[in-house]
Each structure stands twice: as C-alpha cells, then as structure tokens.
Image 1 (spheres, rainbow, N blue to C red):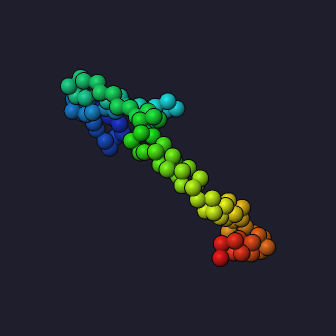
Image 2 (tube, one colour):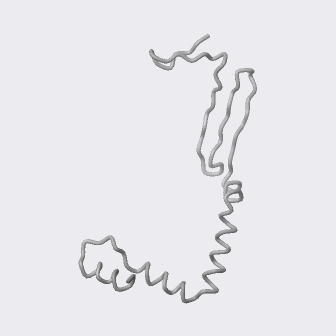
Image 3 (cartoon, helix red, strand yellow):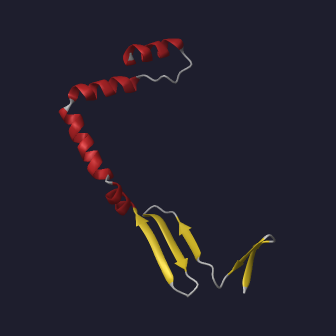
Length: 101
C-alpha cells in the first residue's frame, strides 16, 4: 500500500519509518517511531538529561565560583552591563565608550 503525501511524492508505508516528535516542558523532545517491522521505539530527552549531558549545571557552578573569587571582574561585568552600544542617543553611546574603552 502507498500513502500519497502530495501528488508529486509517494511514500511506501511498507518500508517507511514513521516518526512523531513532540516538544514539551518536562521532556524537551519526545518522539515515537514506528518501524516497518511493527516495532515502536520511544526517543526522549528530559530537561535533566539535557542539563547532565551538556554539563550546564557543572559549568554554572564553576562560573559562580569564578565570580565569587574575582570580585574585581564581577564589578567590571556589572559596570559593562549598565550601558549598551545599542542606542539612538549620542550621550548614552558616549557613556558606553567611556566604560568599554
């Protein structure tokens, strides 16, 4: 049997692998795949698994430690964040230059 996706494309359901993906809040990705032999495979990536595999929490801990141990750097970062180069006002841009140059 064949299923027609559009007049120009024909897909054989006997050999096709059908996959449905659902992004969510608890699971960032949840996918269900039906293989041609009738097997159902579930693929999922939870938020916790994502954080673990990308080392986000470990990196944030290192960054927090670095910030605490380098107060001068933290003060400089706070000063830099007070002004932006994206402005329509000349005086604000001059302040940005004074802080960053």
